[in-house]
Length: 364
Ligand code: PMP
Image (tube, rainbow, N blue to C red; front, side):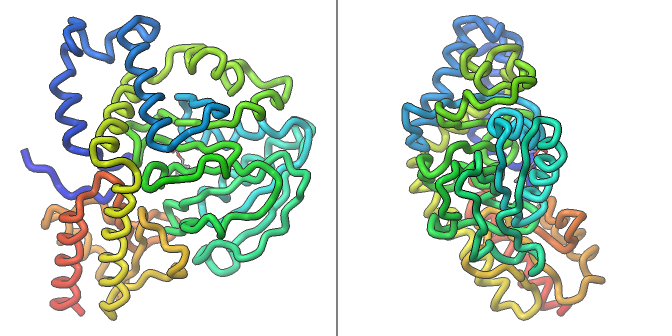
């Protein structure tokens, strides 16, 4: 077996320790006589797994008691629709657009709002500068039901790194944290709701983790189907229907791995180190470039361009041959992208820099 350094933006690399444990437990979970995929979601074994996963996530992020943790499905994209259904309540919501994902969330909110007797507004966008920074000014509606933003744009590599960059509004912030949740400590109380698709820093795709303040659960549009209602899911322990049991189990193993690594403060130190190494090399290279404002450069997703785009095919083929996989940028922006989530070791970043250096030396 040979595993590559996997720079995929998602589904992304998982910690090897987690994969090995899952492999060991695949056929017989802790003497249950069957694997986690094969057990009832309402049985005592799985109940223990989901309760432990929630408790560990609460510990990692210091989630206060007045927030509910939900393990839902549909990908983050489905929640672009569920958020207006559940939280808009016939009022108006603000959206901040800082890249492809928050743009999609805004489009979904705009399409849905008229059908549920509500409105959405654009409070800020960094589209004019090509999504190279977080907005420095916001036009917020103090009465908004919520303000939606994406705190790490996976495609454009733009991250709200400092809490001072967040909009200052009395409206609850609703944050898509899909691609940087658990990469550092986060003050949950700053947000009304946090949600994240699992397939970057949490586990397998399909699972969505929602952390929502309890008082926001009773504002849903009356037509919200029960299976899409955060209130109903909260009242049923995320089990109105069958949840994504195996994904929740893997997520639980990732949470235990993170606690074992020293929690989010320790992970943040490693993530800062990895990102600094890569950006410092890119900036000094004279061959590669990243165009995002330094104060908003994502620690998780590092897009970069080559001096000559005609070399991209050779760059990618050589990288693959060197065991550095999935470095192609998103189709909407082109170029390259190195996603360096929690599971990417420092050695993987060093190997990438070494390859980039050699490529620039021989082809530059
Ligand atoms: N938001 C962000 C920030 C993402 O990175 C992604 C997926 N890459 C999504 C939303 C959409 O997630 P999904 O495909 O699971 O619906």
